[in-house]
Image (tube, rainbow over all chains, first blue to last red; front, side):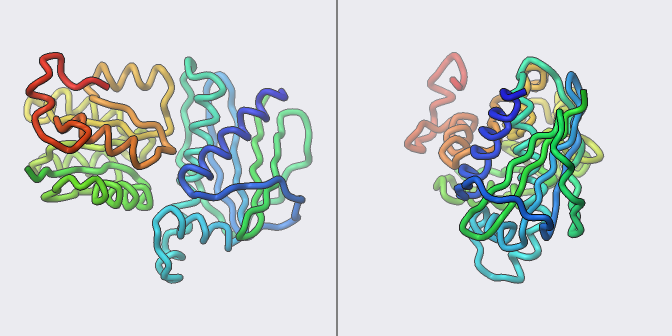
Length: 144
Length: 143
């Protein structure tokens, strides 16, 4: 199980550094975030990956990925951009977990009313991060 | 030589990034066409001249592998070079894509240089952007 967490961490850092130029640091848990994107996957392992963001982090992702500075334009891209982040983190995690196995991923969903992070238990892997713009969290729930 | 590029990805942000990178390659584009799923891409391919396709896999309505299958069955579309650009890079998906005729595979997240090199290779340019590599190399494009 520890291996799963390492693979997930590697996938998160790779996506955020290469695509969004955001360098994440371990952070403290916050009870509520501003928005959430989630993606389900099925195959040899089944589960859900959720990424919870503060709004400033989501805006920074758009700004860095697309190189735009107009706030209205940035806001238009927030949903699409964070959904693509979930898609990339999940896809990379599954390939890094086992590239020889075929997984199917759902289309990412987006919500401005994120659910609460689940209680930590077996099969739940959670990371809390800080970056220059605020806080975010990644939660992977793997079914047994 | 200007070329026409079709970007097929359900993420508007990703299509925007690809367009920006293509602009930075120095390659001369005539048209950059876009579609957010395979079905719309088929419509574009049916009505426009396309020199190269950049194709995601995980999309609504018709995914990238389904589009690739449709293209490989079509006498007019099967020779259009396709570069897969996806997070969904399992060995099975890659094998399927190459069997269906994909010419390259870029895994997201990518750095601009990877996309640039892939496009140059598929279009027959060398690393300096000089045209003619594809004609000179009898073995085709080496990835």
